[in-house]
Amino acid sequence: MKGALIAVEGLDGSGKSTQIYLVKRWLELEGYKVFFTEWNSSVVVKSATRKGKKRQLLTPTTFSLIHCTDFADRYERQILPLLRAGYLVLADRYAYTAFARDAVRGCDRQWVRNLYSFAVPADITFFFDLPLELALNRILAGRPKLKYHEAGMDLDLSPDPVESFRIFQGRIYEEYKRIIEEFHPVVIDATQTIEKQQEQVRQIIAERIDLAQYRWRILR
Amino acid sequence: MSVRQFYGTPPPGADPASLGGKLIVIEGADGSGRSTQIAVLNDWMERKGHATVQVGLRRSTLVSAELEKAKQGNTLGRITMSVFYATDFADQLDNIILPALHAGFVVLADRYIYTLMTRAIVRGCDRKWLESLYGIAVVPDLVFYLKVAPQQLVERNFQKNDSLDYWESGMDIGLSADMFESFMKYQKLIEHEFTRMQKPYGFKVVDGNRPIRAISADLEKHIEPIL
Image (cartoon, rainbow over all chains, first blue to last red; front, side, top):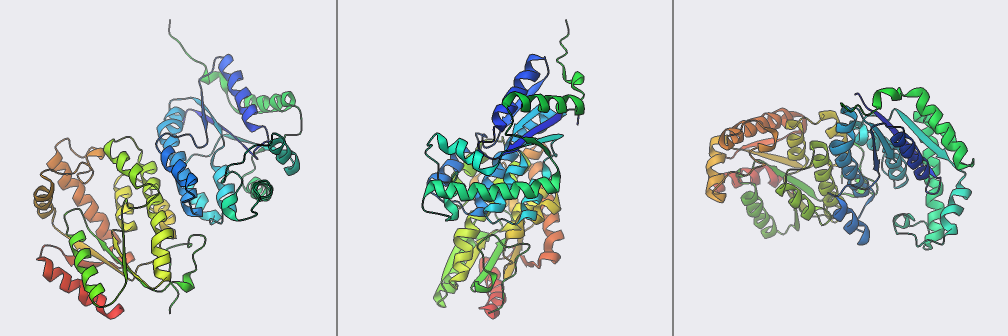
Protein backbone atom coordinates (compact mmCIF):
# COMPACT_ATOMS: atom_id res chain seq x y z
CA MET A 1 0.00 0.00 0.00
CA LYS A 2 1.56 3.27 -1.08
CA GLY A 3 -0.76 5.58 0.84
CA ALA A 4 -1.08 6.29 4.52
CA LEU A 5 -4.19 6.37 6.66
CA ILE A 6 -4.63 8.68 9.63
CA ALA A 7 -7.75 8.33 11.79
CA VAL A 8 -9.14 10.29 14.71
CA GLU A 9 -11.39 8.88 17.41
CA GLY A 10 -12.96 10.21 20.57
CA LEU A 11 -16.19 11.09 22.27
CA ASP A 12 -18.64 13.58 20.79
CA GLY A 13 -17.30 16.93 21.99
CA SER A 14 -13.70 15.78 22.30
CA GLY A 15 -12.58 18.15 19.55
CA LYS A 16 -11.35 15.45 17.17
CA SER A 17 -13.09 16.91 14.10
CA THR A 18 -11.43 20.29 14.68
CA GLN A 19 -8.08 18.57 14.97
CA ILE A 20 -8.41 16.47 11.82
CA TYR A 21 -9.63 19.54 9.94
CA LEU A 22 -6.50 21.40 10.96
CA VAL A 23 -4.38 18.44 9.90
CA LYS A 24 -6.11 18.49 6.54
CA ARG A 25 -5.47 22.20 6.06
CA TRP A 26 -1.85 21.81 7.08
CA LEU A 27 -1.20 18.96 4.65
CA GLU A 28 -3.11 20.61 1.82
CA LEU A 29 -1.33 23.92 2.22
CA GLU A 30 2.01 22.15 2.33
CA GLY A 31 1.15 20.62 -1.02
CA TYR A 32 0.42 16.99 -0.18
CA LYS A 33 -2.13 14.66 -1.75
CA VAL A 34 -4.88 14.49 0.86
CA PHE A 35 -8.33 12.95 1.00
CA PHE A 36 -10.77 13.38 3.86
CA THR A 37 -13.60 10.98 4.75
CA GLU A 38 -16.08 11.02 7.59
CA TRP A 39 -18.34 8.53 9.34
CA ASN A 40 -21.81 7.93 8.00
CA SER A 41 -21.54 9.79 4.74
CA SER A 42 -22.01 7.27 1.95
CA VAL A 43 -24.81 8.27 -0.40
CA VAL A 44 -25.82 4.71 -1.22
CA VAL A 45 -27.19 3.72 2.17
CA LYS A 46 -28.23 7.17 3.32
CA SER A 47 -31.94 6.67 2.68
CA ALA A 48 -31.96 3.31 4.46
CA THR A 49 -30.10 4.68 7.46
CA ARG A 50 -32.40 7.67 7.64
CA LYS A 51 -35.52 5.56 7.36
CA GLY A 52 -34.27 3.07 9.93
CA LYS A 53 -33.45 5.77 12.40
CA LYS A 54 -36.54 7.85 11.85
CA ARG A 55 -38.93 4.97 12.18
CA GLN A 56 -36.87 3.32 14.89
CA LEU A 57 -36.64 0.09 12.95
CA LEU A 58 -33.08 -0.70 13.94
CA THR A 59 -31.99 -3.52 16.20
CA PRO A 60 -28.44 -3.65 17.60
CA THR A 61 -27.42 -5.98 14.78
CA THR A 62 -29.00 -4.02 11.94
CA PHE A 63 -27.69 -0.77 13.45
CA SER A 64 -24.22 -2.28 13.32
CA LEU A 65 -24.59 -3.70 9.82
CA ILE A 66 -26.07 -0.63 8.21
CA HIS A 67 -23.23 1.51 9.53
CA CYS A 68 -20.79 -1.09 8.31
CA THR A 69 -22.41 -0.97 4.87
CA ASP A 70 -21.82 2.76 4.86
CA PHE A 71 -18.24 2.24 5.94
CA ALA A 72 -17.63 -0.53 3.40
CA ASP A 73 -18.96 1.65 0.58
CA ARG A 74 -16.61 4.48 1.48
CA TYR A 75 -13.82 1.99 1.98
CA GLU A 76 -14.17 0.15 -1.33
CA ARG A 77 -14.95 3.20 -3.40
CA GLN A 78 -12.62 5.77 -1.87
CA ILE A 79 -10.35 4.85 1.02
CA LEU A 80 -8.77 1.72 -0.48
CA PRO A 81 -8.32 3.02 -4.06
CA LEU A 82 -6.88 6.27 -2.71
CA LEU A 83 -4.47 4.45 -0.44
CA ARG A 84 -3.37 2.33 -3.36
CA ALA A 85 -2.96 5.45 -5.46
CA GLY A 86 -0.65 6.87 -2.83
CA TYR A 87 -2.78 9.41 -0.98
CA LEU A 88 -2.79 10.55 2.61
CA VAL A 89 -6.27 9.55 3.74
CA LEU A 90 -7.72 11.29 6.79
CA ALA A 91 -10.67 9.63 8.51
CA ASP A 92 -12.92 11.35 11.03
CA ARG A 93 -13.82 8.16 12.95
CA TYR A 94 -12.79 4.74 11.72
CA ALA A 95 -13.49 1.20 12.91
CA TYR A 96 -13.04 1.92 16.64
CA THR A 97 -16.18 4.04 16.57
CA ALA A 98 -18.10 0.96 15.49
CA PHE A 99 -16.32 -1.22 18.05
CA ALA A 100 -17.39 1.16 20.80
CA ARG A 101 -20.95 1.91 19.73
CA ASP A 102 -21.89 -1.61 18.70
CA ALA A 103 -20.51 -3.13 21.91
CA VAL A 104 -22.54 -0.67 23.96
CA ARG A 105 -25.61 -1.78 22.03
CA GLY A 106 -24.86 -5.39 22.99
CA CYS A 107 -23.17 -6.78 19.88
CA ASP A 108 -20.48 -9.35 20.49
CA ARG A 109 -17.11 -7.56 20.52
CA GLN A 110 -15.31 -10.23 18.54
CA TRP A 111 -18.10 -10.34 15.97
CA VAL A 112 -17.78 -6.60 15.36
CA ARG A 113 -13.98 -6.83 15.11
CA ASN A 114 -14.29 -9.63 12.57
CA LEU A 115 -16.91 -7.66 10.67
CA TYR A 116 -14.46 -4.79 10.12
CA SER A 117 -11.47 -7.05 9.49
CA PHE A 118 -11.64 -6.30 5.74
CA ALA A 119 -10.38 -2.78 6.44
CA VAL A 120 -6.66 -2.05 6.74
CA PRO A 121 -5.71 -0.71 10.16
CA ALA A 122 -4.90 2.99 10.20
CA ASP A 123 -1.19 3.87 10.14
CA ILE A 124 -1.84 6.29 12.98
CA THR A 125 -4.96 6.60 15.10
CA PHE A 126 -5.26 9.54 17.45
CA PHE A 127 -7.62 9.22 20.38
CA PHE A 128 -8.64 12.58 21.81
CA ASP A 129 -9.12 11.92 25.45
CA LEU A 130 -11.38 14.34 27.28
CA PRO A 131 -12.86 13.47 30.68
CA LEU A 132 -16.48 12.42 30.28
CA GLU A 133 -17.93 15.39 32.20
CA LEU A 134 -16.08 17.90 30.06
CA ALA A 135 -17.17 16.21 26.84
CA LEU A 136 -20.77 16.11 28.04
CA ASN A 137 -20.66 19.76 29.04
CA ARG A 138 -19.35 20.81 25.64
CA ILE A 139 -22.19 19.06 23.87
CA LEU A 140 -24.91 19.88 26.35
CA ALA A 141 -23.90 23.52 26.89
CA GLY A 142 -25.33 24.38 23.48
CA ARG A 143 -28.70 22.91 24.60
CA PRO A 144 -28.82 20.76 21.50
CA LYS A 145 -31.83 18.84 20.41
CA LEU A 146 -30.32 15.39 20.78
CA LYS A 147 -31.29 12.88 18.13
CA TYR A 148 -32.80 9.58 19.23
CA HIS A 149 -29.82 7.35 18.44
CA GLU A 150 -27.27 10.02 19.25
CA ALA A 151 -28.66 10.06 22.78
CA GLY A 152 -28.72 6.24 22.86
CA MET A 153 -32.50 6.34 23.42
CA ASP A 154 -32.79 2.92 21.75
CA LEU A 155 -31.03 1.43 24.78
CA ASP A 156 -33.81 2.41 27.20
CA LEU A 157 -31.34 3.94 29.59
CA SER A 158 -33.59 6.79 30.59
CA PRO A 159 -36.75 8.43 29.20
CA ASP A 160 -34.97 11.78 29.43
CA PRO A 161 -32.77 12.33 26.34
CA VAL A 162 -30.15 14.35 28.22
CA GLU A 163 -29.86 11.76 30.98
CA SER A 164 -29.81 8.98 28.39
CA PHE A 165 -27.05 10.77 26.50
CA ARG A 166 -24.98 11.06 29.70
CA ILE A 167 -25.25 7.35 30.48
CA PHE A 168 -24.72 6.35 26.85
CA GLN A 169 -21.59 8.47 26.43
CA GLY A 170 -20.30 7.08 29.71
CA ARG A 171 -20.58 3.57 28.33
CA ILE A 172 -18.98 4.57 25.04
CA TYR A 173 -16.10 6.04 27.01
CA GLU A 174 -15.67 2.75 28.90
CA GLU A 175 -15.55 0.88 25.59
CA TYR A 176 -12.99 3.32 24.21
CA LYS A 177 -10.80 2.64 27.25
CA ARG A 178 -10.95 -1.04 26.48
CA ILE A 179 -10.06 -0.33 22.84
CA ILE A 180 -7.08 1.80 23.90
CA GLU A 181 -5.79 -1.12 25.96
CA GLU A 182 -6.25 -3.49 23.04
CA PHE A 183 -4.99 -1.42 20.09
CA HIS A 184 -2.79 1.32 21.63
CA PRO A 185 -3.76 4.37 19.58
CA VAL A 186 -1.90 7.63 20.22
CA VAL A 187 -3.76 9.25 23.09
CA ILE A 188 -3.86 13.04 23.02
CA ASP A 189 -4.81 14.96 26.14
CA ALA A 190 -7.81 16.90 24.84
CA THR A 191 -7.94 19.24 27.81
CA GLN A 192 -5.02 21.13 26.28
CA THR A 193 -5.48 24.11 23.97
CA ILE A 194 -6.33 23.44 20.34
CA GLU A 195 -2.94 24.76 19.26
CA LYS A 196 -1.03 22.58 21.67
CA GLN A 197 -2.87 19.44 20.59
CA GLN A 198 -2.37 20.27 16.93
CA GLU A 199 1.31 20.78 17.48
CA GLN A 200 1.62 17.30 19.02
CA VAL A 201 -0.45 15.72 16.29
CA ARG A 202 1.59 17.31 13.51
CA GLN A 203 4.82 16.30 15.15
CA ILE A 204 3.77 12.67 15.43
CA ILE A 205 2.58 12.59 11.83
CA ALA A 206 5.82 14.11 10.60
CA GLU A 207 7.82 11.60 12.62
CA ARG A 208 5.96 8.49 11.58
CA ILE A 209 5.08 9.20 7.99
CA ASP A 210 7.55 10.03 5.28
CA LEU A 211 5.54 12.98 4.04
CA ALA A 212 7.87 13.88 1.17
CA GLN A 213 6.58 11.00 -0.96
CA TYR A 214 3.02 12.41 -0.83
CA ARG A 215 3.76 15.67 -2.59
CA TRP A 216 1.95 16.41 -5.78
CA ARG A 217 4.28 15.81 -8.65
CA ILE A 218 3.17 17.96 -11.50
CA LEU A 219 5.05 17.52 -14.70
CA ARG A 220 5.75 20.78 -16.40
CA MET B 1 -37.78 -28.24 23.80
CA SER B 2 -34.13 -28.38 22.77
CA VAL B 3 -32.03 -25.23 22.81
CA ARG B 4 -31.68 -23.66 19.40
CA GLN B 5 -28.24 -23.61 17.88
CA PHE B 6 -26.71 -20.60 16.16
CA TYR B 7 -23.76 -20.79 13.77
CA GLY B 8 -21.81 -18.39 15.99
CA THR B 9 -22.80 -15.89 18.65
CA PRO B 10 -26.57 -15.21 18.67
CA PRO B 11 -27.56 -11.60 18.00
CA PRO B 12 -28.17 -9.39 21.05
CA GLY B 13 -31.64 -10.01 22.45
CA ALA B 14 -32.00 -13.58 21.17
CA ASP B 15 -32.74 -16.21 23.79
CA PRO B 16 -31.86 -19.59 22.24
CA ALA B 17 -33.67 -21.49 24.99
CA SER B 18 -37.00 -19.81 24.21
CA LEU B 19 -37.01 -20.59 20.50
CA GLY B 20 -39.35 -23.37 19.42
CA GLY B 21 -41.01 -23.58 16.04
CA LYS B 22 -39.28 -24.89 12.94
CA LEU B 23 -37.06 -23.28 10.38
CA ILE B 24 -37.08 -24.85 6.94
CA VAL B 25 -34.89 -23.47 4.19
CA ILE B 26 -35.04 -24.02 0.46
CA GLU B 27 -31.96 -23.05 -1.50
CA GLY B 28 -31.39 -23.17 -5.21
CA ALA B 29 -30.68 -20.98 -8.23
CA ASP B 30 -33.27 -18.78 -9.95
CA GLY B 31 -35.49 -21.11 -11.91
CA SER B 32 -34.79 -24.10 -9.67
CA GLY B 33 -38.41 -24.11 -8.53
CA ARG B 34 -37.89 -22.75 -5.02
CA SER B 35 -40.84 -20.39 -4.93
CA THR B 36 -43.17 -23.00 -6.37
CA GLN B 37 -42.11 -25.49 -3.74
CA ILE B 38 -42.49 -22.97 -0.93
CA ALA B 39 -46.04 -22.26 -2.06
CA VAL B 40 -46.89 -25.97 -2.18
CA LEU B 41 -45.31 -26.56 1.24
CA ASN B 42 -47.12 -23.61 2.71
CA ASP B 43 -50.51 -25.01 1.63
CA TRP B 44 -49.59 -28.45 2.87
CA MET B 45 -48.60 -27.17 6.30
CA GLU B 46 -51.55 -24.88 6.75
CA ARG B 47 -53.83 -27.74 5.80
CA LYS B 48 -52.24 -29.69 8.63
CA GLY B 49 -52.79 -26.80 11.03
CA HIS B 50 -49.29 -25.33 11.26
CA ALA B 51 -48.90 -21.57 11.36
CA THR B 52 -46.32 -20.44 8.84
CA VAL B 53 -44.41 -17.33 7.94
CA GLN B 54 -42.15 -16.74 4.95
CA VAL B 55 -38.88 -14.92 4.58
CA GLY B 56 -36.50 -14.46 1.67
CA LEU B 57 -33.88 -12.24 0.09
CA ARG B 58 -34.57 -8.51 -0.23
CA ARG B 59 -37.77 -8.69 1.79
CA SER B 60 -36.77 -6.59 4.79
CA THR B 61 -38.60 -3.41 5.67
CA LEU B 62 -35.29 -1.74 6.31
CA VAL B 63 -33.32 -2.07 3.09
CA SER B 64 -35.26 -4.00 0.44
CA ALA B 65 -36.01 -0.90 -1.64
CA GLU B 66 -32.39 0.27 -1.43
CA LEU B 67 -31.09 -3.17 -2.42
CA GLU B 68 -33.45 -3.27 -5.35
CA LYS B 69 -32.12 0.09 -6.44
CA ALA B 70 -28.53 -1.02 -5.99
CA LYS B 71 -29.28 -3.99 -8.26
CA GLN B 72 -30.33 -1.66 -11.05
CA GLY B 73 -26.94 -0.01 -11.18
CA ASN B 74 -23.70 -1.80 -10.64
CA THR B 75 -21.96 0.55 -8.33
CA LEU B 76 -21.43 -1.32 -5.06
CA GLY B 77 -18.26 -3.14 -4.16
CA ARG B 78 -18.37 -6.79 -3.18
CA ILE B 79 -17.91 -6.16 0.54
CA THR B 80 -20.46 -3.36 0.57
CA MET B 81 -22.91 -5.58 -1.29
CA SER B 82 -22.30 -8.42 1.18
CA VAL B 83 -22.81 -6.29 4.26
CA PHE B 84 -25.86 -4.67 2.68
CA TYR B 85 -27.42 -8.11 2.08
CA ALA B 86 -26.45 -9.14 5.61
CA THR B 87 -28.38 -6.10 6.87
CA ASP B 88 -31.41 -7.31 4.93
CA PHE B 89 -30.99 -10.76 6.44
CA ALA B 90 -30.46 -9.50 10.01
CA ASP B 91 -33.56 -7.32 9.79
CA GLN B 92 -35.67 -10.36 8.94
CA LEU B 93 -33.86 -12.48 11.51
CA ASP B 94 -34.51 -10.06 14.37
CA ASN B 95 -37.99 -8.98 13.34
CA ILE B 96 -39.51 -12.08 11.74
CA ILE B 97 -37.56 -15.31 12.11
CA LEU B 98 -36.71 -15.16 15.82
CA PRO B 99 -40.10 -13.82 16.98
CA ALA B 100 -41.87 -16.45 14.82
CA LEU B 101 -39.78 -19.29 16.24
CA HIS B 102 -40.43 -17.92 19.69
CA ALA B 103 -44.15 -18.11 18.97
CA GLY B 104 -43.93 -21.65 17.60
CA PHE B 105 -44.37 -20.93 13.89
CA VAL B 106 -42.93 -22.82 10.99
CA VAL B 107 -40.64 -20.39 9.16
CA LEU B 108 -40.22 -21.11 5.45
CA ALA B 109 -37.14 -19.43 4.08
CA ASP B 110 -36.88 -18.91 0.34
CA ARG B 111 -33.04 -18.91 0.44
CA TYR B 112 -30.96 -18.21 3.51
CA ILE B 113 -27.38 -17.29 4.39
CA TYR B 114 -25.95 -19.94 2.05
CA THR B 115 -26.88 -18.12 -1.14
CA LEU B 116 -25.50 -14.90 0.30
CA MET B 117 -22.25 -16.58 1.30
CA THR B 118 -21.91 -18.40 -1.99
CA ARG B 119 -22.39 -15.27 -4.06
CA ALA B 120 -19.86 -13.39 -1.96
CA ILE B 121 -17.29 -16.19 -2.11
CA VAL B 122 -17.59 -16.41 -5.89
CA ARG B 123 -16.86 -12.66 -5.92
CA GLY B 124 -13.72 -13.11 -3.86
CA CYS B 125 -14.90 -12.34 -0.32
CA ASP B 126 -13.14 -14.15 2.50
CA ARG B 127 -14.85 -17.34 3.64
CA LYS B 128 -13.88 -16.95 7.33
CA TRP B 129 -15.12 -13.37 7.29
CA LEU B 130 -18.49 -14.52 5.96
CA GLU B 131 -18.73 -17.34 8.48
CA SER B 132 -18.22 -14.88 11.30
CA LEU B 133 -20.64 -12.37 9.80
CA TYR B 134 -23.38 -14.99 9.50
CA GLY B 135 -22.62 -16.46 12.90
CA ILE B 136 -25.73 -14.57 13.99
CA ALA B 137 -27.90 -16.96 11.96
CA VAL B 138 -30.00 -19.59 13.67
CA VAL B 139 -29.31 -23.13 12.45
CA PRO B 140 -32.32 -24.37 10.46
CA ASP B 141 -34.07 -27.68 11.13
CA LEU B 142 -33.84 -28.58 7.47
CA VAL B 143 -32.04 -27.14 4.46
CA PHE B 144 -33.02 -28.35 1.00
CA TYR B 145 -30.89 -27.61 -2.00
CA LEU B 146 -32.80 -27.88 -5.24
CA LYS B 147 -30.20 -28.91 -7.72
CA VAL B 148 -30.96 -28.22 -11.35
CA ALA B 149 -28.54 -28.56 -14.24
CA PRO B 150 -27.42 -25.18 -15.68
CA GLN B 151 -28.79 -26.10 -19.11
CA GLN B 152 -32.22 -26.68 -17.55
CA LEU B 153 -31.93 -23.42 -15.59
CA VAL B 154 -31.32 -21.51 -18.80
CA GLU B 155 -34.49 -22.89 -20.32
CA ARG B 156 -36.57 -22.10 -17.25
CA ASN B 157 -35.17 -18.57 -17.05
CA PHE B 158 -35.99 -17.93 -20.69
CA GLN B 159 -39.49 -19.29 -20.16
CA LYS B 160 -40.04 -16.97 -17.24
CA ASN B 161 -38.39 -13.71 -18.29
CA ASP B 162 -37.49 -13.89 -21.99
CA SER B 163 -33.94 -13.08 -20.96
CA LEU B 164 -31.20 -14.03 -18.55
CA ASP B 165 -30.82 -11.94 -15.41
CA TYR B 166 -27.69 -9.78 -15.25
CA TRP B 167 -26.79 -10.84 -11.69
CA GLU B 168 -27.79 -14.48 -12.01
CA SER B 169 -25.46 -14.54 -15.00
CA GLY B 170 -22.65 -13.08 -12.90
CA MET B 171 -22.09 -10.39 -15.53
CA ASP B 172 -20.61 -8.11 -12.86
CA ILE B 173 -17.54 -10.31 -12.40
CA GLY B 174 -16.43 -10.49 -15.99
CA LEU B 175 -16.44 -14.25 -16.62
CA SER B 176 -17.37 -13.60 -20.21
CA ALA B 177 -18.73 -10.70 -22.20
CA ASP B 178 -21.18 -13.19 -23.71
CA MET B 179 -24.21 -13.44 -21.45
CA PHE B 180 -25.02 -17.08 -22.14
CA GLU B 181 -21.47 -18.19 -21.55
CA SER B 182 -21.23 -16.04 -18.42
CA PHE B 183 -24.46 -17.55 -17.08
CA MET B 184 -23.19 -21.10 -17.58
CA LYS B 185 -19.83 -20.36 -15.98
CA TYR B 186 -21.35 -18.44 -13.09
CA GLN B 187 -23.93 -21.11 -12.29
CA LYS B 188 -21.18 -23.73 -12.29
CA LEU B 189 -19.16 -21.68 -9.80
CA ILE B 190 -22.20 -21.25 -7.57
CA GLU B 191 -23.02 -24.95 -7.79
CA HIS B 192 -19.44 -25.79 -6.89
CA GLU B 193 -19.69 -23.66 -3.73
CA PHE B 194 -23.01 -25.22 -2.78
CA THR B 195 -21.50 -28.65 -3.18
CA ARG B 196 -18.66 -27.63 -0.93
CA MET B 197 -21.09 -26.40 1.72
CA GLN B 198 -23.35 -29.42 1.43
CA LYS B 199 -21.66 -31.51 4.07
CA PRO B 200 -20.66 -28.97 6.74
CA TYR B 201 -24.10 -27.37 6.60
CA GLY B 202 -26.04 -30.59 6.18
CA PHE B 203 -27.95 -29.80 2.99
CA LYS B 204 -30.46 -32.29 1.72
CA VAL B 205 -29.83 -32.28 -1.99
CA VAL B 206 -33.01 -32.66 -3.99
CA ASP B 207 -33.01 -33.42 -7.70
CA GLY B 208 -34.86 -30.43 -9.12
CA ASN B 209 -35.01 -31.79 -12.67
CA ARG B 210 -38.34 -33.49 -11.94
CA PRO B 211 -42.06 -32.63 -11.92
CA ILE B 212 -43.35 -30.34 -9.16
CA ARG B 213 -45.34 -33.06 -7.39
CA ALA B 214 -42.44 -35.50 -7.27
CA ILE B 215 -40.22 -32.88 -5.66
CA SER B 216 -42.77 -31.73 -3.11
CA ALA B 217 -43.49 -35.33 -2.12
CA ASP B 218 -39.78 -35.68 -1.47
CA LEU B 219 -39.67 -32.55 0.66
CA GLU B 220 -42.76 -33.53 2.63
CA LYS B 221 -41.25 -36.92 3.38
CA HIS B 222 -38.31 -35.20 5.07
CA ILE B 223 -40.37 -32.56 6.85
CA GLU B 224 -43.09 -34.85 8.23
CA PRO B 225 -40.92 -36.40 10.98
CA ILE B 226 -39.79 -33.06 12.42
CA LEU B 227 -43.24 -31.48 12.72
